[in-house]
Length: 299
Image 1 (cartoon, helix red, strand yellow):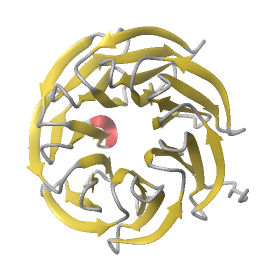
Image 2: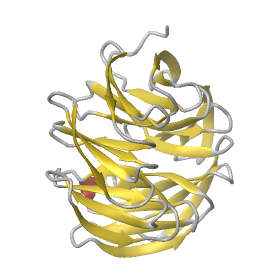
Image 3: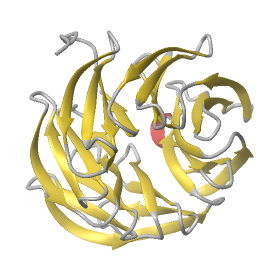
Image 4: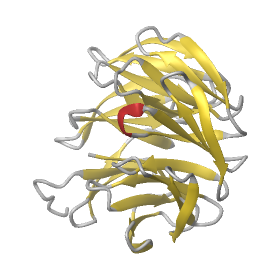
């Protein structure tokens, strides 16, 4: 096991083909541990205090809860078919899980890790985010081609916003003022203003978008183009593509590292993670991980 820097955050990479989470020390960019989870894990979410990681397992229809201090699973929570996107509320009191095949979102109370309810919110929910204030949850519905907004306290759907075909990946700008949606089929990046829940703008870019993330200053976004093996760098102010970064085969999710100058990209077709430098617009390292990596979080 590689010794971890006491100050460096970790990256938790979900290997859907190997039923594990690979842990990377972001100071050395070396693998430090591997944690076994459920069947066909998809995405992951880290609690705001960094103490707990939840991993959605699509085929076993459950969520693995991991203690990050010990890097050990501490419990399994049954949800519904096709568990995918997941997120904590800011107060860590709840976890939301999108169940793609059941067309529901599960609400989990973290006090006792009990499922409070399952809510139908659209067809094929994939990814979700909780707004910083903790009041709303935003969910992409890939099959019904819309974005749902849930009341985080009740789980009730309060709004549905039509989107271009195949909304999949989701990211929030700093402060949660804008939700950016990566549309896998139509090849659009969609911006939804969250104060009034209106479509602000959209742009066509790249091909087969899966993941999206936003730089800390909110000026740029990175979008994975899974069938072109590169990232599109989007100028969010000018609303134009500002460059491309070649990565590994079939890139999926992308996550900024602390400081916002580098990012990790999961390469499903190469069982690896690319380390990219945003200033030079190039891949600087490739890190082997578990088979068919998809989701990832850093903290």
